[in-house]
Image 1 (cartoon, helix red, strand yellow):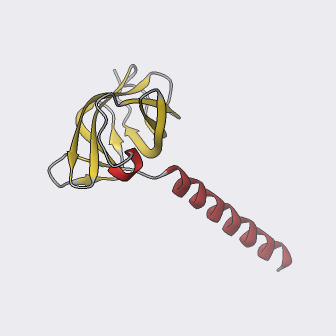
Image 2: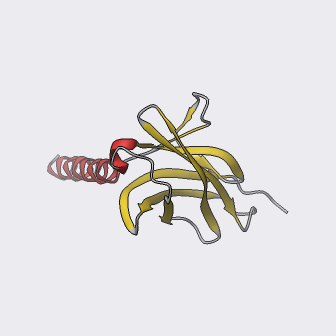
Length: 134
């Protein structure tokens, strides 16, 4: 009984710590820009946008936005194509690609939004891609 209680306590502590880490980095959502929301970005897509609160960007949409990414599988890239403002959100339209479509992608991308030579915010979003036999 004592061992089970210790295991449950450890699992709850890990869940709480993981949840706080994700909240601190800011979990983002993807959208098509027309009202549909997605919980992840998908490889081989160039129609999805990442929603970022304008408040995280200083309540403006800088013209020199760029992104840097971390946490992606080798050969998987996210490229910023364009930006637009929609209400109190900035939509960062991106292209998600990978060099090898025979392997699957199941990552959490950490995306840092930069402008004026400094990081404005960092958001996290899952990135998925199915593996296809060639």
